[in-house]
Amino acid sequence: MIATNNSAVNGRPPRRKRFEQGDLKSMAQSGGWCLRALGLFAAGWLCLGEESSAFAKRAEQNYQEARKKFHTHTNDAEAAWQFGRACFDWADFAKKDAQREAIANQGIAACRRVVARDPKSAPGHYFLAMDLGQLAQTKTLGALGIVDEMEREFSAAGDVDPKFDYAGPDRNLGLLYFQAPGWPASIGSKSRARKHLERAVALAPDYPENHLCLLEAYLKWGESKNVQRELKAAEEVLPKARKEFTGKAWEQSWADWDKRWKKIREKAGELMK
Image (cartoon, rainbow, N blue to C red):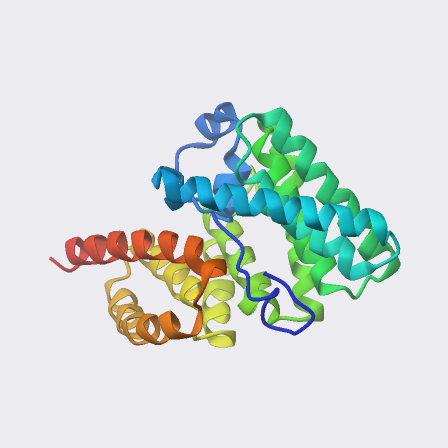
C-alpha cells in the first residue's frame, strides 16, 4: 500500500472486500455495513482454499515482524505506519470480531501516534482510515459513527499526497461515497463517488484496481456508454499491469482482480443487450 515513495507501499497493495448492497437496516444488523460500504477489503480470495491459507500465513508473518520492529523503534514514524498497514492486512483474516477488533485497535493506536507527531504524514492518515474500517466491521450501528472519521483521514491523506498508494485516497473515498447510505443516514453521494473514482483513474491510470472500481460503479448506475469506454481502457491496462505488478506480493490482488474482471465483463454483456 504505502511506502516512502509516493506510489506504493513496498510494492504491496491493500485489499478490499466485495459485498452485495442491501438496505441500511439489514447492513446494520449484519454487523459490518461500514466495511462493506467502503469496499476496502477483498473477498475474492476467501474461497481460494490453500491459496487463501498461504495469504493468511504471509499476512501473519508480516504482522509479527512489523510489530517487533514497531515495539523496538517506538519513535520511528515509518515503523509505526508500517505496523498499521500490517495490522490492516492481518485483521482481514480474523475469524472472530474480538480478534479483528484487537488487531485493528493496535494499528489505529500506532497510526494515531504518527499523525499526532506529523499531521502531514500521508501514510499515517491513510492507514488510520484503513484500520478504522477493520474496526467498523466489528460494529453494528456503531459503525456509522466511524465513517466520518474515515472520510476525514482519507481526505487528509489525499491533501498531503494524492498519488499515495496509486491514488488510494481518492479511490477509497470514492468507494465510501459509492456504497455508504445517503443523507440523512450517512455520507453516500453519487456525485462525490463519481468525482473521486474518476480522479483515481486519472491520477494512477496504470493501476488495475482504479479501473475495476470505476467500472463497478458505472455498472451499478447503468451507464452503458461509460462502461464501454472504461472497458476498453481496462482491456489495455490489464495486460501491461500483469508485467508490472508481479511476484508473491501481488498474488492476492490478482486473485481478486481476475475474479472481479470476469464478473464485470459478464455484467457489461448483460447491460449491452
